[in-house]
Amino acid sequence: MDDDICGLDYNRLSLYDKMKSIYEGTCLKEQFRKAGLEVIL
Image 1 (cartoon, rainbow, N blue to C red):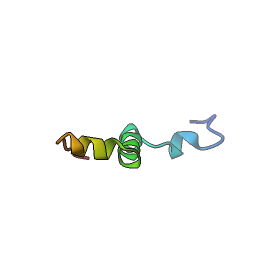
Image 2 (tube, rainbow, N blue to C red; image 1 turned 30 degrees about the vertical axis):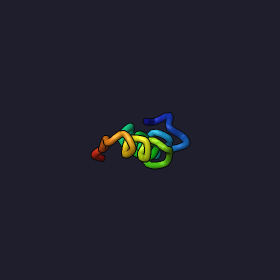
Image 3 (cartoon, rainbow, N blue to C red; image 1 turned 120 degrees about the vertical axis):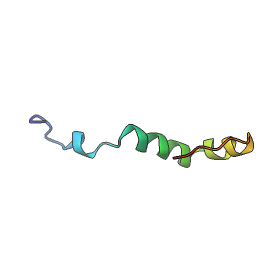
Image 4 (tube, one colour; image 1 turned 135 degrees about the vertical axis):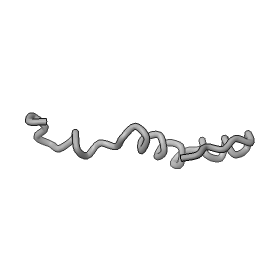
């Protein structure tokens, strides 16, 4: 955008990347595994 002086619109993670980061960086991955569930990314 023309008013994007910090470049935030170009440097933000996509929704997919945010969700993947949260899933892999927290206990969710282990908890899903313990419940017998698999997440395909």
